[in-house]
Length: 178
Image (cartoon, rainbow, N blue to C red; front, side):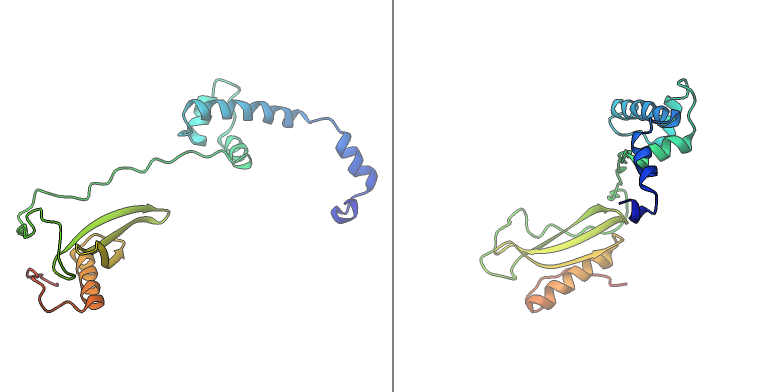
């Protein structure tokens, strides 16, 4: 191993027997304090808050706390903030309820329902619109986008029409496609 690291054998063994430096001992003590504050915050605090919590204990720098946390895999849990996606206070037309809570169908392409959901990803919110055929409860069309505009639902509906060939006989409301 000494050859691979390009050090002398005696230097390597001296390193193994050498006592811990004062800085290493201080870092280990500080790391224990960091872990304690991190646990008491239920993993929410990051390095700036942990540094401010430790100010009374010798005032470590933010960079030192950050470096020790990163080296030991201590990270704050980021809480995703709730994002309201429904605005019920508008003057836009609302489609009438054609199903009247009758969520069964005797044959395919008789009744479709759709919905939009959103998923938090590392790159932001991903919106997913799906169209389900109530006969067999199969997803017949879907679309994904970084936005929740009507074009997302129209794309899912167009995919469902294309996949099932059910354009004829569908009772579709008028959709402004612009």
